[in-house]
Image (cartoon, rainbow, N blue to C red; front, side, top):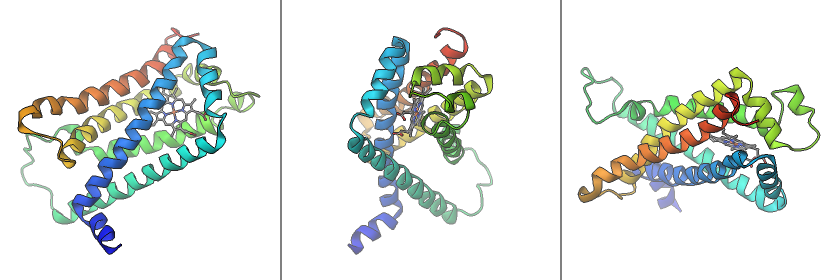
Amino acid sequence: MSWVNRALKSPIGAKVMMAVTGIMLTGFLIGHLAGNLLIFAGPEAINSYAEGLRKFPALLWLARGGLLGAFIAHLAFAAQVTLANRAARPEPYAFNNTVQATWASRHMVLTGCVMLAFIVFHLAHFTWRVTDPQISAMGEFDVYQMALRGFRQPPVAMAYLLAMAAIGLHLSHGIASLFQTLGLNHPRYNRGVRFIGPVVGVGIALLFASIPLSIYLGYVN
Ligand code: HEM
């Protein structure tokens, strides 16, 4: 399998793997978002959805394993591509007047690190339930009450909104560039493709952000 090794070590192989794992992670995010939006349908809707996920532990752990694998691979290939880019150009450009490069594209490492920190906090908050003694003391797994209690606290709501901004920026550029990496761009519809990243990325971030924001502002009780 030395050709697989060689392909993965090549810059384009690493970019393809980043694109593929990025699609898997975005797929998870869209599914997670759809489930979480049930919070607007009331406590029963979201709690029975969360309970449903736990009914098939083997399937849940399989999905978790796949998600963790895709996540670790995405980080590893991102590190490989970033280090290869830096090695190719150790000195920054004397005149940085790149017209095409957006703020999001130049700060993928920063927004990626904010997302990583967010995920650790998020797991501690909702999955391990160790950030708030009152949540830890809850007997049953009540997602609705956990969300209400968490997002009514200004620092928690603010942290989530900040993380959603980073997610919106990261996905905007990530989705746009995966079309290029996978050769899915064509001069005839390039203008449309350029909008897909920002529309999908910002759309996902705004829908996620609507949850802490509506709870913090008291629209969900
Ligand atoms: C306001 C937005 C969000 C809410 C209300 C929310 C809610 C939740 C809840 C309730 C769980 C626990 C599910 C369970 O253990 O059964 C969870 C798990 C998780 N969330 Fe979120 N989430 C949000 C945003 C995000 C975002 C943006 C990401 C990724 C960047 C994310 C990644 C995860 C992961 C990886 C898990 C662990 C999944 C598992 O243990 O199977 N979440 N989330």
